[in-house]
Image 1: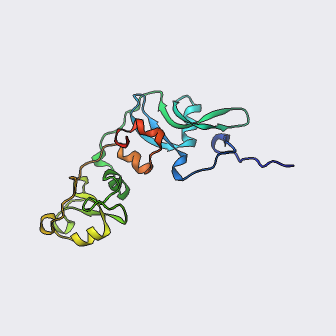
Image 2: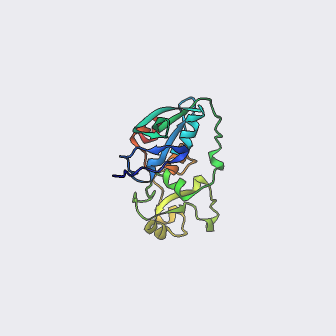
Length: 192
């Protein structure tokens, strides 16, 4: 009787035969700086390379292993870089994307709190001279966006629940992984 083998994954490692991928985020690993500050999200493959090159160490791991023909390592969920990496803090210069605005605003409309059919809205409309900056763009559901139109907030009585601001750098971790695995929560103060 022939047995079916699991094809090798990245770096020649094959996932545990009993493991099935569950959702799009199961292939993500949280990367902490040497100071335990969260700085990025990477793939399991990239994390395995960093571990094999001794550039990182495992902080949290899954119950199964990544296996190659001659070795096995625990499947990383959170890794920590061995040496400190200087991370640029110029968040205000990062490209403004819809996903980044949604993550900053907690994936909800800043006018009514809805979580469906999200778009972005300029608080001060561009037609009225409003800039395309973090401080002037909010998440808005399509009905609120249509209702507000190109009017100023005080004209239609629609003010954002929270004043828009430049996001904390950790927002970009939420952009890379909208659902936060439980093992990451202790490392992300905003997700706790």
